[in-house]
Length: 126
Image (cartoon, rainbow, N blue to C red; front, side):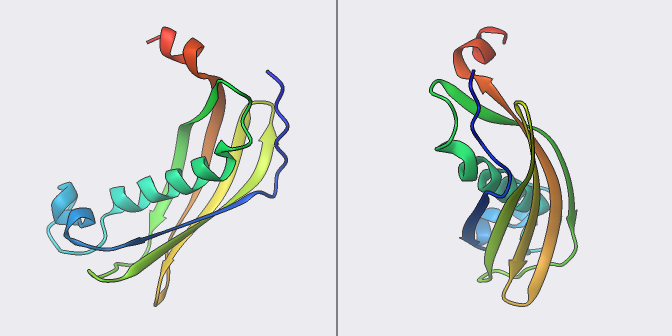
C-alpha cells in the first residue's frame, strides 16, 4: 500500500443543532443541548472526509482514538462548525487536531487518530 498523504490537510463540516442531536436524543444527558456524542461523531466525520479522496484504492481510514473535551453547551438552532487539521502522518497512522465552535465561540476540541486499512482485509478479520 503506497500512502501519499502529507500533513497540513484541513477539513470542515457544519451541522445544525436540532432535536435529533441533543443530549436527550442521544441518552447522554437530560437537557436539550448539543450532545457530546454528536460532537465527537462530527469531529470523526470531519477528519475522515478530509482524507477520504486521498486514500489508496480499496482503502479506508478507521478511527482508533479520540481525546475530546466538550467545553460549552450549544442550544437548538445553533450552527456547529468543525475543523480538522492533519498534524502528523506516520506510515498508515494519521493524527488530527480538531476544534468545534458555534456562533458564540469554541465549544470543543480533540486530538484524534485514524489508521489507513485495506477494506477487504480489515473486514475479513471480523
